[in-house]
Image 1 (cartoon, helix red, strand yellow):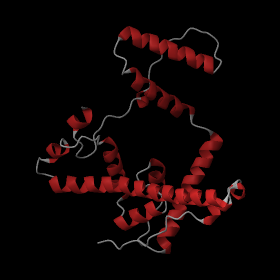
Image 2 (cartoon, one colour):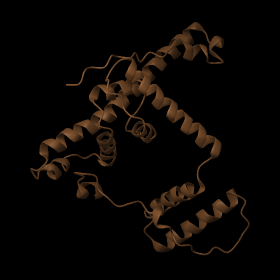
Image 3 (spheres, helix red, strand yellow):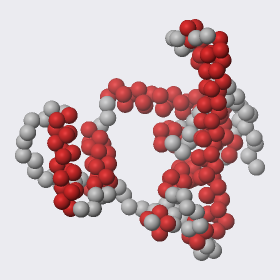
Image 4 (cartoon, one colour):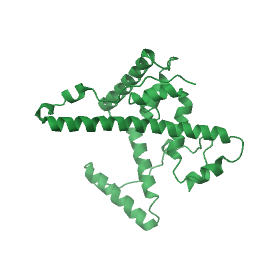
Length: 233
């Protein structure tokens, strides 16, 4: 059994409030209420992060227990919830292979390891062998710095045009598939294009169809143990 991590208080430090530009303008009663509410918000966010990781870990345990029995899909069909998110989180936890104590400490530090931003950073940085103490906190400090640096760089440089085009194409296609009538879908597409031209001040012009790059289309695949019929229903 992995050693239990030291608990880190979810209490928001006083510096957070003292650095608010309007803090001294508030009455003592308002300050007290804001402090209490903020601490509850922070504790709730830590709880959400832990629950997301726990869902993935529980799914992994059930998958392992039922592996090879042929009962896995029948088991999953009993659940009404969508499993797509759980399997995405499970896949990330599988790749990180971190002991529970490390996952708990990450949540206490506000690091959601199944979130894409932190997952990428943790995949690149070698995880420490220690599961508690200063070595683990130092590791998470590096993870936080890596994530902040990437976000700052992305903000400075802006989003890659090719990736932005791909993401926009997927979003529009996904919405368009919900419009079943062919004539209505055509009118919807034309109206959308017209609104985009107006928004970006593009002069009226003839539009020609353009082939969709293969990488624009999401890759088809199923995580290990994923129940196809349940997810497609």
